[in-house]
Length: 247
Image (cartoon, rainbow, N blue to C red; front, side, top):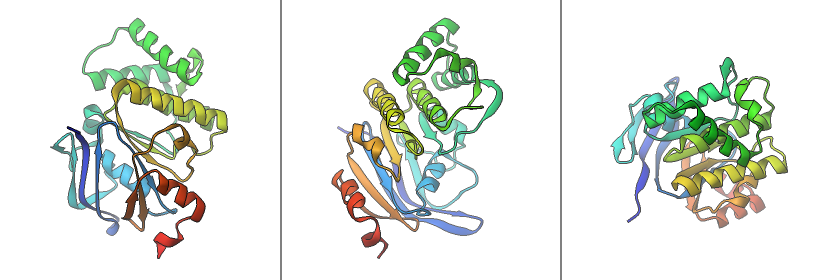
């Protein structure tokens, strides 16, 4: 029997006393790939931030259940340890903290155990090989001086090592060339093969979907989910845009 990884029930959210998400409901099961699309300002990234517990947003109605547990009021760090992951459109730069040190600490927090340095280094190298990242990246400050493509690879490296139960990927393919999209897609597919994780992909471009099987496509307009379909809905949007849904 399929297992719900996340259940969003009638979620209503406001920021600065303005309601921006309205009665949003969505279930994602283990191993499924869901795509969230919509025009600019529709609330897609907001939903990702709310699911990860960004304190900027206030949930005024509904609930979020993760693996059957109500996490509506849980902080972001607890959600991450439980197995949730969010990649950012613009990953933060952290001077003085190496990528390898950050990753090792994050993986230990996720697994709840200390990892021997050489074991971690071997595991990290295997993931870097998939993304065609040189080992020297591990010694560089987290995202500092990284190109846009390098930052996105760094995010997918984190995904591969943390092995979350669900990954929310926010515009992961934006600003990437064709080769970088291919490598990032390969990293995402490796993650899915190794832990059968669920994906919620927030995107305008659909290049990253060329390498991934899509189970459901959702369209968000003005903070509401207005329709849900299968992978063919992506093709419809590419051909016709959002005009029909805006009406």
